[in-house]
Image 1 (tube, rainbow, N blue to C red):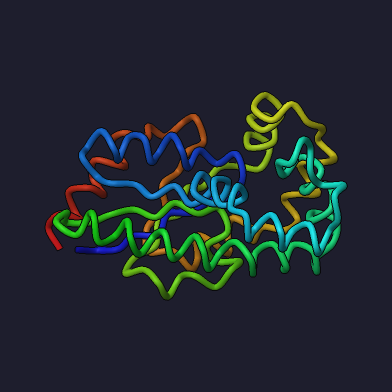
Image 2 (cartoon, rainbow, N blue to C red):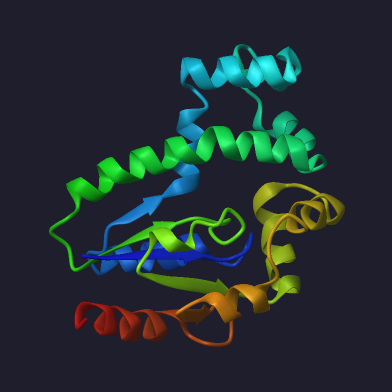
Length: 193
């Protein structure tokens, strides 16, 4: 089984690409979804409360908007959260891998794969690439936030060209180049390895 890491900056279309891979019977591990569920764990809540206090909670639940307001403006706070959540995500990924070990390849989707030095956990890396202007417009529609807030969050991600340089494969999602043929071609190549 080939372990693929799939990444791309916010708004690049990683989820859309992963959904297409899923239609081709490729299992996809969505690290962001798994990470969000981990915030419900008692020990995670306790660590967050001791680090940030009660202000990042609403009715006993981590308020992601309040937490994001802190961590995207404080690299120490971001490092704390990453250090808390990412090992737990990889623990869940290990369990998931064992359940899907009969497939030719699997995909682990993560927005900050390179930023967290995770690339060595995978056999190949796919980057979903998209121009920043298109990504900002997608995020404005999706997240109901401001351009200023989006750009602040984007500062925590590696530039597209650097991600592309470090990747084994690049899928271009610029609204001009068709996604499905790129993915089908890549799927065929990965199944033949």
